[in-house]
Length: 187
Image 1: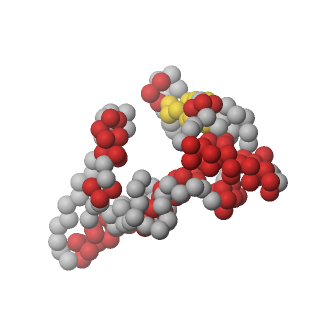
Image 2: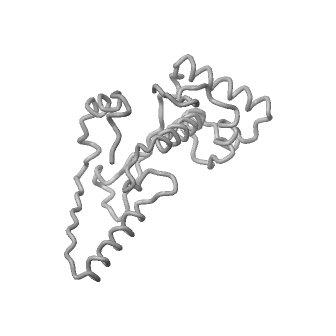
Image 3: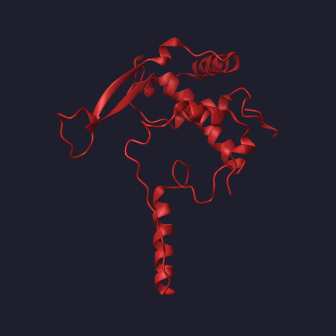
């Protein structure tokens, strides 16, 4: 990602990023590496430094360990659904803890960059820190009440596309993501 700011998205990771992300990580189920977060949290300072060096090697050389490409898939039954229908399960992928930790570091950096560049519209609440989809519901409720009090009409359209994620044209999404960031900006 090309950046014109002082702090580039592509800079090497900092030891502080690794330490902070590790300290805030919850003890989720480990993946194929079978390493629980608690093991990484108990590393001595020189162990964390070594982890930091490994992550920066991966980041700067743009290599990705083959073992991290594997996951343990656990099917989780959706609430109140028939157990015998395969479509009533959602897959949960348990990836390697070391990979998840690096993903969290990169995700935090990416979210920060997007927020700093005002990439998101003010009306987007989902998938943002300190925002919630409930904020959208509160905004809708407020608009309904204002329309009611002012004896006006309010038009709302809700769209729920069945299996939308499964039907996404992935190649097009990748193509859009590769475009320059100024093409993404919304108002």
